[in-house]
Length: 475
Ligand SMILES: [Zn+2]
Image 1 (tube, rainbow, N blue to C red):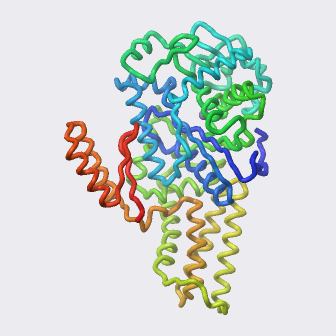
Image 2: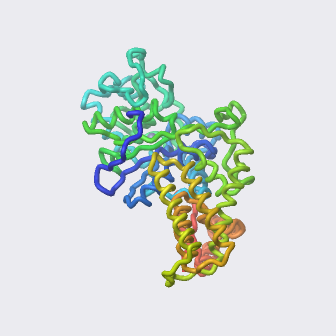
Image 3: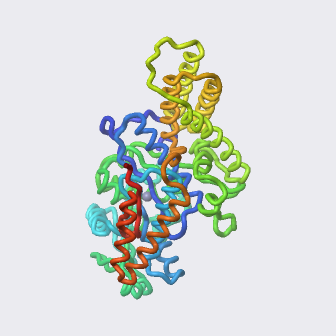
């Protein structure tokens, strides 16, 4: 909002209420989406490292112009369509080691609250009913457009915008509630999750109202941090502010964090340019840690270009960091009982502490992950050199703990050394598919048998709206 770095002070001491705009689930996630998810994940991890108790919400938009349009194109009921892509989004989060949010609310779970919110805006005189829906009157919110630094004298005040997404040049009254089209009404007879009854006729919410309602319900009237991709500044976040502040009369967000777009070979990624790269394509070629490293290697507000060279370089750099972790894990360690450190041992501990301090300073400064990684490489080099001599077990343990802790704040190499690898995951997934096939065939005995045998191995299954998920219980 101020276009400057500010000291972070949450509303309540030590507590952070954070919201990040999640995906619109109308296709498989692409690698551009994940720049903003990884950055939000890093922010959350760093705040937790600094001792904050973070509540983080990331929504899922499962009703809007695009989900309606593309589910029709796919000839699939909207609910199944969006659930499929919600699963695909969650799989992407897990693959990249992004911590799950405290909650991932779906827009369609909040329709009654949205209707109440819209009615309150009408009661305040900030919204009005038109023939095709309910609109927010942007003239009624002083300061409209401040977040995006726009010049309101250029707007066409008399017009209304029906679409969810549009440019600054077409800033107009925006839709809060859209009456269903005849086609949508027809589809809604057989498709739940497409149209709802409201005081303004059968319809569905506009995109922007979704976040205003879910943030208020789950986090309260004022958020500490609201994050999202830079493309959301206008109209989405601009409209969220207008709606929320009109209702509460309070500041909606204390700190905005916007993440720069990912480019592909110097161009903006888009389906029409044919340079669209899917998440699975990247993971087929590079490790998830290399991919995470690639995003973290550049500060979130700086330009980042996806190229094969950049990915190869990220793979090499992350391997170097991982190699040090391998060496530390293999080295004999013991609690330090010897207080008489040799000059070499003292030197290593001093260096580790110095690099940790630099790492912390970098991330404290607006999440400078690029510089933080430099400190980690410096630490890695010092540790490698030390381990090549005859290391002291206690000193090695100290260095290991610090190194591992810093890697954890970046979410790197977390899946190592666990009992899971790609083949294990595929085998578990195959058994789950088999069990679900038995269930569809109503062969519940065999289905239960598969489940029980997995449970006996420590793999527990959970059935939910997105299908069956699993986890390995730690013994
Ligand atoms: Zn949003």
